[in-house]
Length: 286
Image (cartoon, rainbow, N blue to C red; front, side, top):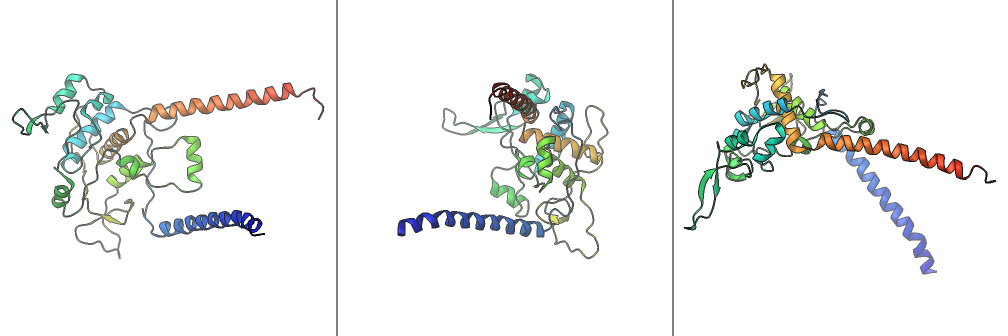
């Protein structure tokens, strides 16, 4: 009797546990949503890499690299990126060598057992602005500037139901780039009645609050583009966002194209199976 009861109760316990987990998820979601951040949903930008056949614009990525080099690199690292990866942006080996050589990296030990400085090579990782996280936090009043390598993936806000369902069919994967762009152009004075603590800056697109420690980094003509493109705030925000998206997901276009081909194959295969089933069972009485 005890064994039978245990067998009956076991599925009930599993079902109960599942319901509790589901309730926990359903209760946690409104709690997160109740925080109300970001206040404004990120703007959807028409990126060159959008859709199943989109590709990265190399000219835009080169402009994004320029912004990172001249503006963002003063605070933010890209520890997972190697200088040789810049070949994806259309740079030659010589150009990459010259770009890397502008930075000094620590190497060694040498024959005397000492570490030494040398010009960076294409095989080196991007050099960060600080020696360690402690120095980075100290230089920024306790706020640690995040590494840029995967930020376009890590800071991509959830789209929620039912939007993410449609994203499967449209192959939308640019929410990280949309968020970064919106954040960069979204700095503004706080509305009446909203208090912002000293050292913080109001931005309704910030995913973790209404204000953040980073001051507005880009302004009109913060850089001068080599290709003659007008360096408006909007253009700069798009270029650095695209560059960060490439850094976080360099194979995004190829992956989406392969996924589209796989979906077409599965649809064709399903149709073939259905036609075969109809043919095989056509003369069999049911």
